[in-house]
Length: 127
Image (cartoon, rainbow, N blue to C red; front, side, top):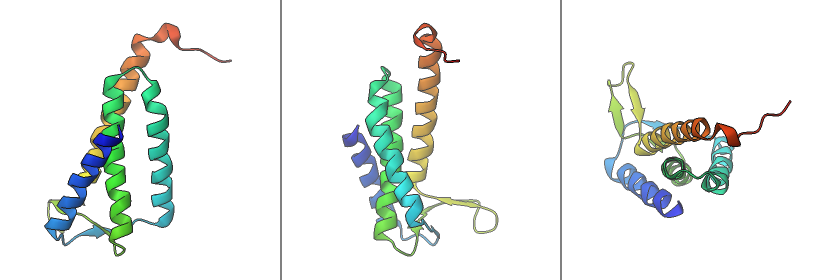
């Protein structure tokens, strides 16, 4: 999982460094710390789920989160956002790490739901 995450974080950081974007967004130290805790949780718990799709989704999400955490440390004036859709007036500015986080989360959540539906008998109810 960490190999996939580090590879995607490197792709994201290279894109941020080479693009020289006009747009940036701030990341507070609290958000960076919280992101780190979530990454540790994903790395620790997702491999326990017997689903390759969940594993890959978590790896992609962790790669994106790692890219944004490293960028927040390297670029103290804001995380670069080289991808712009719609321009400055009402558009969206984001980076590859944001795409990786969104895609990885969507895959991870979909895989967990499908895993739960297929393994309903193994789920425990508490009341």
